[in-house]
Amino acid sequence: MTIALHFIDPHTDPWRIAPEAPAPQPAAGLLLRPEQWRAVRTTWPAEVPVGVLWPNDTDITGIAPDLPRLDLIALHFPKWTDGRAYSQARLLRGRWRFRGQIRATGDVIADMAPLLWRCGFDAVVLRAGESVAVAQRALHAFDAHYQPDVRHPVDIAELHHA
Image 1 (cartoon, rainbow, N blue to C red):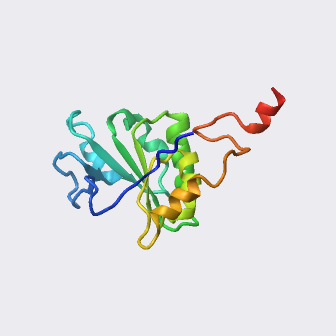
Image 2 (cartoon, rainbow, N blue to C red):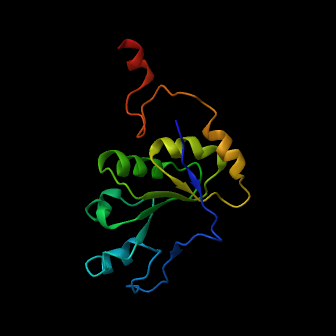
């Protein structure tokens, strides 16, 4: 299995957080806060790529109707021990079949990489001081898992009984 979890360097990332304006002007590569997106969603040009920074304490169902228009959803981990963004990513990939980039931001440590991948994230901004090499090794620490995930919905136990 190929794991394509991309580790984003914030210094070279083409995506940038939109200025604090209530309704930012359309520009490629902007990451909007939920209230900014709500203010511009009906007027944002379809050809201009846009992303949303979605807090982990905000119901992810609020963004579901807009998923076809979004290129990126950045889910935030305020602390590495707060796993609500994992659930948000699973819903985005599993329930709504979101095909854009789901990015983990905030207090993201290397050890989180395997679970991020299994929950549907495909990009990560590690917190300062974390090693991309360690995160990449963690992705390949296990060959199989007993629990299903968004990338492998059938678990190993079911395969053994088939």
